[in-house]
Image 1: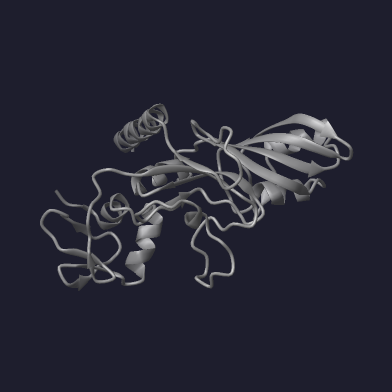
Image 2: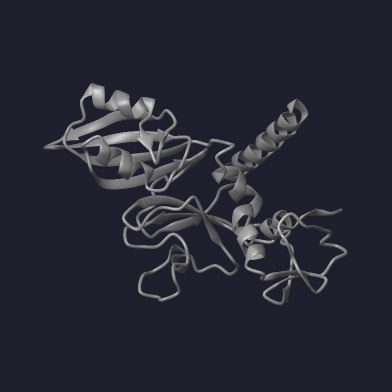
Length: 251
């Protein structure tokens, strides 16, 4: 059965669909000896698909790892210079594992590494709006008016941010721990919004993506997902696939 090429590549462990589209744009993918194009369809059982000249091998079983990314570690592979450690280097497992939902260099916490491109797409695509929860230490003590502005949304890059859940967890001397729950993930969004509101971020820890929680992992520690966690993640796939079918029927 023919499928879009980026979906096949995602299933083979080359990243999210958007990352796979970039591979195609770079001319690194061929189908039956011809350079592939965006939107092209192929049958992995019939067509010869290669990436960088190597035949595609579809994975039948995927790997799912939760890592507590430390500060100073890159989420992705970086620029190849080797000057900074990458999260993938902390997980000594074989295969091409990539991060689901990146964290910047100064941020820490939950990072899901997997070779399941379809799941990565479902968890990170804005269309599905899965919750991401953070513990955030900011300068000062935000008052209720400031928290309300954050909750309702502020203008960032010319458009408003989506409503967020922002609550106070603990107050310290001239600092405050906040719990922030988002359903969107613009680049450095929490840091930028907090700075706009006059309370720069001192520390940022992601503790949850959807149903998946960081738990008691220490910085740099990792573990494979439990059977129950996998079941919950697969239910996300089923729900979003059902939603996508319903959307197509309503348009």
